[in-house]
Amino acid sequence: MKKLFGKPGSVIKKILSGGKKANINLPYSGSKGDKKGQRSSFEAYDPKKTQIGIQTDYPSDNKLNKNRQNDIETCPKCQYPLRIKPDSSSPCPNCGFTGNYIKTVFDSGKTITINSLSLESEEVQEFKFKFIKEDNNSEIEIHSPDEPEVILNRSHLDANNSTISSEQHVIMKFKNKKVYIEDVSSNGSSFIQAKNKMMIQNGSRLVIGNKIYIFSASGNLPDSDISNTTRKFGEFDLKVSQTGSDFNLTDEATGKRLNFDKTYIILNRSNLDPGNNSISSSRHAEFEFSSGQWYIKDFSSNESTFIQLKSEQLLENKIRIILGNKIFRFEYA
Image (cartoon, rainbow, N blue to C red; front, side, top):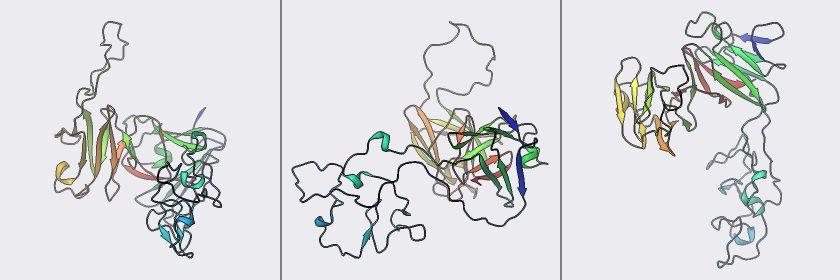
């Protein structure tokens, strides 16, 4: 059952303070390997035999690396030589490993079975999080111990901001110990940061720097005159429409259309909007066509690539979200 925040029994408080708070240590899913006895012992390396679970560039036993000094550690993740074991205060300079151990094929000498792999992302034990306004660092804390869904709107997020829907703007959901977000606003003004490679739905709006573009792929352009009436059999083509391997971006403010005919391209200031310093000059966003779909990933130094929320999305800790014309940072409380 959804509930509207601000009702009796719910907890929501705003902390109008720009001060920083200590990071919360959150539990993570997945098995953690035993740091002792990580590797199988191989007496000798036989080049005629396939070494199971071993990359020969990285000897699996100290006997194969007799010249290595005893006082030098190696990073469990990338095998980079270290003087001390990596931890949060002294991560590996090569790969950034901080000591949060993840079991790999180097540990047992065998390929890990599928049920031993952690395919899960960050988990939390309760439905508790906060939004931090990027303009003034004020915090909005949300805690819903009894209901799996809450609706946030203008009164919760920014009381006098008419770009945020007054009744319901986003639904926050708690499923399988993870937090999800879904846009339910009347103006479709919810965007999520494209930090990882994300699929672009045709007709989606993209925020790149301080500009909003509408994405259209060839062969499957958005239809602005779609009837709500279900069409009868025979009135539609049974063939699945194929998205073409080129696309265009239409500036929502000016209507100017930019066409791109490559299956992989890095967009930047020069090919999007010369002179606009809110767009990175070298690499702002990657567009890639793969398996019949277009994907986008942010590469900008100012992390200003966002994609419109068209469906329910899993939220990562510290990811940025645009709601209306406000930028919030999502964090676990």
